[in-house]
Amino acid sequence: MGRPVRVLLFAMARTAVGRSELEWTVPPEGIPATELARQLVAAHPRLAAPLRSSRLVRNGRYVRRPTERVRPGDEFAIHPPYGGG
Amino acid sequence: MSIRLTPRPLPVAAAWRELEGPGAGGVVVFVGRIRPDVSPRGRVVAVNYEAHAPVALARFRALDARARRRFGAIRVVLWHRVGRVRAGEASVVVGAACGHRAEAFAAARYLIEDLKATVPIWKTERARSARPPRPRRGRRAARSSG
Image 1 (cartoon, one colour):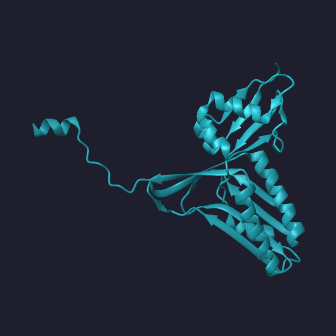
Image 2 (cartoon, helix red, strand yellow):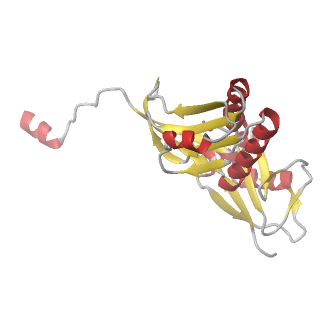
Image 3 (cartoon, rainbow over the protein chains, first blue to last red):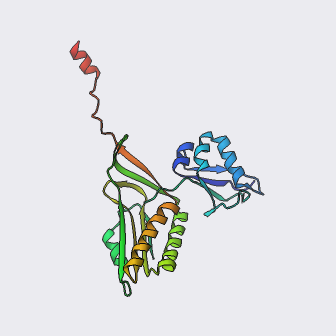
């Protein structure tokens, strides 16, 4: 199976899950980013609401296509709407 | 380019020094501070900032490059606090040094507006209730009244 995906959670997403980081196991060929998001919601139903307004980030880059694959060892972040300043 | 994402207080006067140099006919610095606003939850005493640091710093570099390209900025400052920032303290400092004032104002405005919209930084307000504390009803009081 290889290394897990490191999932980073911020703001509302962190509050919903109660943690700022998770490890998630995916198959060696990876899974689509949207499928990973679906699996995370299945495990943490309170994540559903913040995910609707969030951007997904894989290895520091925004996920542009829902079919983009997340592979073992990747970093996958959930970014709720920003609020700096 | 001067970019910072730091838990330490932002030295506003130092931002001016970063922007000094030949060719800068217009220098604009914007400082955002924590307001002690009153909300239903009480008075804001601090704001906690969190960031996805590697992505935030990459966005800062992109903003710097765009300010140079779009407004001819000669020097740029982009500083933001993370962690707990108390009311009255600066949470963000942006600045631009350009050839003329119009470009400097436009560049500084662009930097702060785009920072708020596109840099992965989040805030959580910490409020202190304005309601007076409830009187204590301890065992001792109950005994003495009996």
